[in-house]
Length: 510
Image (tube, rainbow, N blue to C red; front, side):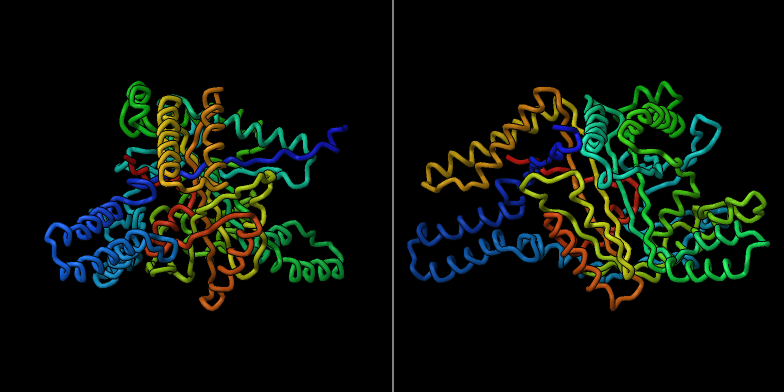
């Protein structure tokens, strides 16, 4: 059989992370179940039938709060989230105002002002080792440093099976190479935006390259083509973010001079070492974002209308005779002028965004292109997709998988004692867990991964239509989405921005 006739490789075996305090219960849920059990036993100890009429309803309510589901969350978690959100609304902490209201430093300047969880970030500048400068996002709370690259790739849909498999395996090898013991790179983010394009950059380029001697009929035909083709175009931007942990790389950071300078130097060294592996996966780095480039990526996410101005400025800057400002945005102007966090929507400048978390990946085997429906061109909305990977070292992976196996075996024995039959889903999850452990023992890497999606519109009336279209496309891809209720601002920071914001810490089970 020729290579062109070979069947494409399929992928699967994603394992859900169990984060319950006990079983699928959170810590609060476990407390509610324990309290319900104790209250239910009170009438027996006091030997009073009257106590039954008080104890059993209370126990039933506590069990309902522990096990009932509201909008995909446990009822007790939903109530805590709703109360927290209402307190935030009542105290106006869900509203962010910058611009004229931004705080100024001693020199009268307005430093970069970002809302919510991004407020702690600082944008640094570091040499890239090749005579240029790159922007580095520093999170002093976590001790992390993130560099961002804008990349291009040839895609997978229109190439033959052999090259498709080779590129996927090269990306797999790249991720596996990061799963080292105490590796310095602790997080990788793949971020892609699908942007409606009105053709501003294309028209600017055409005007600069149209000869003054061109026939008027040809110029008119070209203008008509620009007017008709430009508004239906869609452009994609793809970013890769790499986050270094200064605590894991403390010896290397100390050897490079220590502090922020040493951490940035170690990060740049890691970035240069990665480039051959990225190239083998078909990823070509267009540029490592400068501070102005990072600020532009942030600004255009918060204010989509600024995308037109940025595109026109970048197209004009390519002209050798350009005398205007440099491409990008001043870091002081990166954040939104105003933002407001709602229960299920995030309003920022002149746009509205709804973010989703992927809560279920396909159970069946899928092709490498299964995520393509999520970034289909849409003229009424822009979409953002973020894939977050956190490599796990061999020793931690061994203990994590062993704990998962122990929990599943304990649950199986409990089901057997209670006479409950094991479902096919549970049997399949156990099989996948065994295969994962065998793959780890054979040298494969283990990563934590999550996926978040965001849909942004400039007209509030189009928001629910855009959300429905996204959910339909996600269903076609075999994904289960959950709207991030009560935390839209935090989800936006991950789904719509390539800043390498991380996964939540895993709760330790018992």
